[in-house]
Image (cartoon, rainbow, N blue to C red; front, top):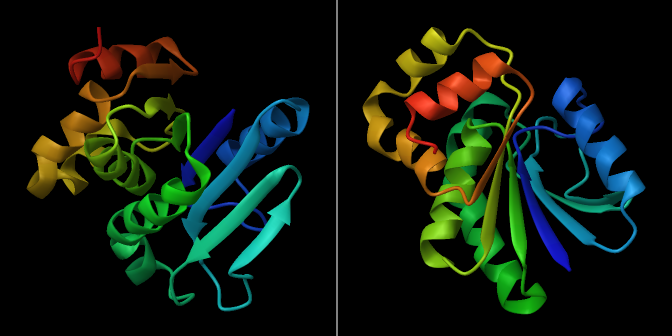
Length: 165
């Protein structure tokens, strides 16, 4: 089985979500993992293996600009990798920039299962304000996911508000 992970950040840029992904992927030996993430610093390697994950970083190391471009660039790279790797499932770490990348990839590849992981730590009202311009796409991150995994009842309620059964 091959899994593609979309994440806005990854090691060496560490938060709770990144630690969780590493802990989970290090314990699973029968899945091949690739990840597309933002190149948050010019010092970050464009491609490397971190634990059991082949990590592809895209961007110029400019932080905010690279995050804004990430959904489009990541879905394009994912499409290119998918032609070669044939992913069975994709995993979006949170519904932010990585969620948009996964949504765009899912629309072109409906046969690839989509796992949305919700572990947002930001105020959800602030998250909603930030996505007002692309509200329709944001809701589709939730409704196009085949599976949604949450770390709290609070996030489960949010997912239901967004249309998850």
